[in-house]
Image (cartoon, rainbow, N blue to C red; front, side, top):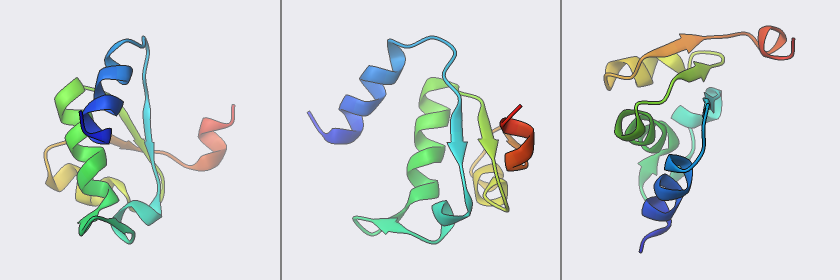
Length: 77
């Protein structure tokens, strides 16, 4: 089982999962893919809500993800 499949299976077992993304998601790569690609795939596969900081919501929305842009101060409450 790949690490990605293992992660998805573990997240399926949890309740109230929120995926949090930040500005590095569209700048950093892993295995030739941007982290935003992985975040989008996970969010779509598991129908997860996404709280996106900075401009990380833009590439996620382009991939069809329902991402809400949040400031760090809003999430700390």
